[in-house]
Image 1 (cartoon, rainbow, N blue to C red):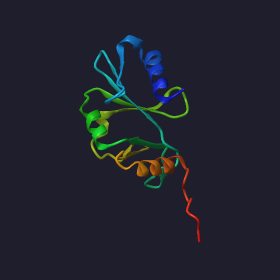
Image 2: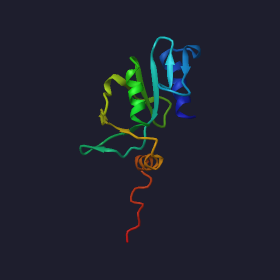
Image 3: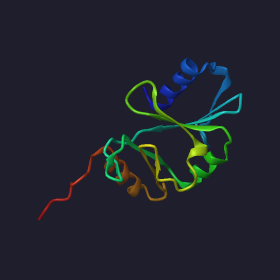
Length: 139
């Protein structure tokens, strides 16, 4: 099950929304908006090996661009739903707690990527998942 399907199921089963009260934004942010004015952006926790100030963090949250962050912060009731492997979010973060250029929220590392540079995005995702570390041959 993909992350957005897990989020939709969670919104219906755990938050009491019915399917008709949830609008899916195929283009634009947040991913879901409800008839009561709430927004939900869905993120997958990227890896478990981020370190911040010498403590192990549970993972990172990647925003695709500063434009996305600005769009989400303008939504008055937006929350970030962070999913790991399970069916429940591992964090529900009010966007109001993520001012522009925040780099950490509780134990989560916050990263902003720019999709104009797809190789940089690809490298960051590989690093976050633990792939590609120390992949250069010593020589």
